[in-house]
Image 1: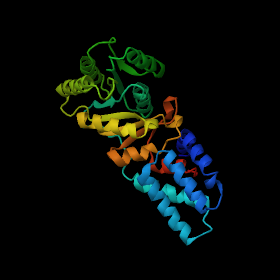
Image 2: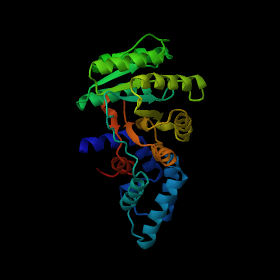
Image 3: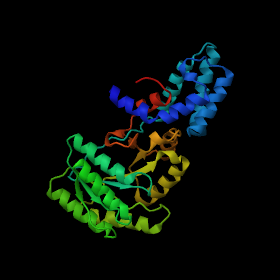
Image 4: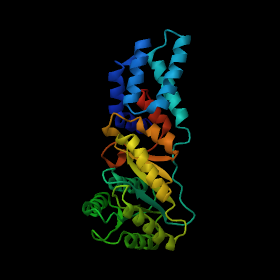
Length: 306
């Protein structure tokens, strides 16, 4: 469990450092005072926690400070973490297999979100947990995407069904489902096309992939996860709304949290969309894709120990 928490702490280090810099190390042992409360408010806004969450955290810390003028920064951090845990209640997605194998997970997202890489990391993680997986390289529009997934599949020894760049993505999905079924796989993970969410032809292609999969299994794809870049903040929310309207998302994977000081965006995404967060990306390596834990996230953000 300590190793799991360390992943969160290391992955969110930029956010933690930014908050510490703006509050002059408030959570390292300083006492709370009116100036530090102002610093904290600015730090939380900068880290992209949003107006609502920032106001809730500040209100509870101010209430505690009003009762105890000797309140320490560490105590304030614990109050902040408790507020985050409350706000994020119900946000953790738990992956459950469907009634019939293979259970299909469609990975959706725009180019640059880390979708294809995350698809490979997810398959590797599931394989490590003893689940059998086939990958479908259905991002056939982007020249690099199929090759990228092939490279990852070779490196991580993953089962992959792919065609050439420009191939019909729905046909690849159809073949991949048949292959996954024939091979007795537990899961089929489909890497879908990654053009901008404002492009109508992308939504049509996603709908076509869905229709084709439903010829095999009317419930497929059982999971429809949007991969969002955690550093984009409110842009991620708008992006997700469009995909949700068109495709009926069932969950989120938030990537690139290690590369941003705006790790608070994940809270706004949950508050706005109420879509469960299944995994978060905390680094480049396959093992850096971690199941989302509200508890570990809340503690890590405020520099608390696991």
